[in-house]
Length: 135
Image (cartoon, rainbow, N blue to C red; front, side, top):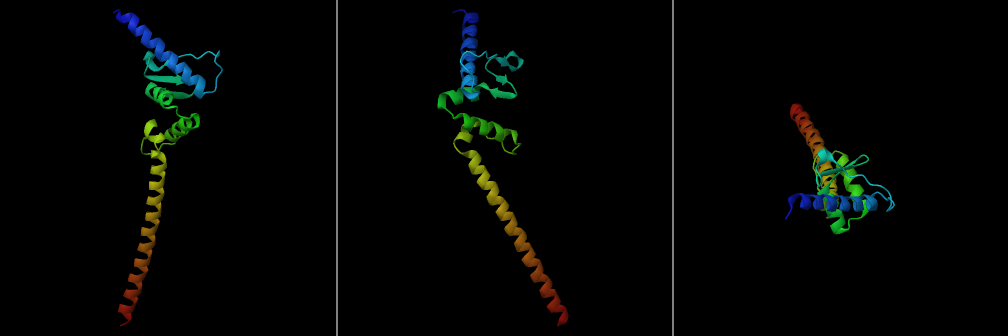
């Protein structure tokens, strides 16, 4: 088996899959040219298309699992929003972002409840001190 031929076949298949992904997800016509722009020439690593940088494993996942275009871009935008916790695409598709959002909302609610409890406790202690001074 000729390794150069095998590697060339791998590169061609990877570029074909990436082209299919770009056409489907960026709403291009089949006859439009899609330049495979792999970061550092690493075919199968990270692909750049316009302002997007996409890992090939995410491209492969989208094609294998028929991830909706809107879901892919929602995940991509979610990642760009600088969330303190990274969620990969497959977990995002399973609902991890929604779960994380609910947890953050619950945490904020709990923080407000703690602040309210501190305020009530402080007022009660001040009232107790005032009564103790008067006695």
